[in-house]
Image (cartoon, rainbow, N blue to C red; front, side, top):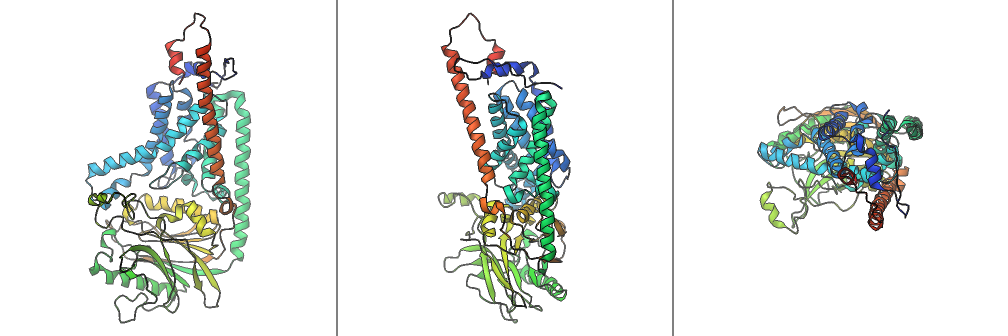
Length: 572
């Protein structure tokens, strides 16, 4: 094995490591432009192939190794950072290709314009990898830390601090491997990201570090074994609770309505859409459902904020016809006279009374809310009609469902992508729901990738809060996720815009386990904060050491020796 970690370290009088000497020691192994590009591209492709819908998740345990070679061997800091960013941009491009069709449909953009914005999005998302490469390169040039330690804390930091339009994390690639993701109830999904990068780093250390890599390799193996053992024990514990927990039959209706035919905007379609929801609900009620769930904004009429009970049976807006089962439904509600719009979830009890309402708090940027629109109202001239008009809700809630035996079940409603926001889910978990209910509309995104990626990210919520999640998604994937993060029931994804399909349903019996009693619920993102502090301290110390070293070299008397251009170049 090649040893690229030899440390021919000269020291300045102040005892600071000379970064130029370190770089010069690695110079014979520097990578050229094209090999660096090839390795970075390989890494990016490996990451997106690890993710759904490609399902080659085993690749994720080595996906970062090619980039690590580039970071350690690039002759300049700028090149190392550039190729790290490139790997992130390629990974984003392969994972988010559905954005092109989304922009064409939702924003009515031409294909060239949609593709241009998609590329801009990839450029931005690649910043996570750019910062990762910058941090690893800077710290490694000054301190002999194993990559098995440095890579996980650096990547967790970068995923934590970079704001994203469509939230995601590298842990998504392990969503279908329950034993691996159980540590999410301690650290959130970023702990799984850390495991991935630790293993990648240990493999890189082993390939390049010789005997010095044995200790990081053994330490990484022990941490990984401990994480898997913890996962095994937690799953056994939760399985015992699932068996003993009270159960409830829940029916899920999947409307399969195309985004451009929603009844709220097309009144001529509303009655047929409502009839389809009612038909599926009657069948679920006949099959024994104790709660029926309709997807986000599936009710095809606008409701007033003071709506308190179902309409008379003579009204065309009557919600429940032919069944009396309690119903949690998604609806657009408006306040009067200010005409504010809310994306709401309403619970109707067995008597048709509204038992509770939750208004979506985390609005989708540019879809439901335009950042900065209050300060720059002229932006609205360039947006499609109806874009960004929603008002956010004020607080997380649980909705009380009273069962026939008089017991009350606390439902934790989350709307759309709120089911993949760990910090928001903690606010729901603090209320200790016995069942998370997610209502979603993913119709905008097609059927191939995004609905499955959304589901993959959602499984972490059940682990973080240790309770079951029921998902009703307009065009799929509707699903039941148990407290171990296992998808125990699911439907399918369809694009009703291209492939119309009638409304469908799913019935499942779910355990009622009070959630929110986890370490992650208690300490939150402490793990991410610790990683961020460690990275910031080491990065800052490396910058200080480099500057101190430059000052020391400047003060040293010359001895007739002059640095070669290569040595000067490699200082960075």
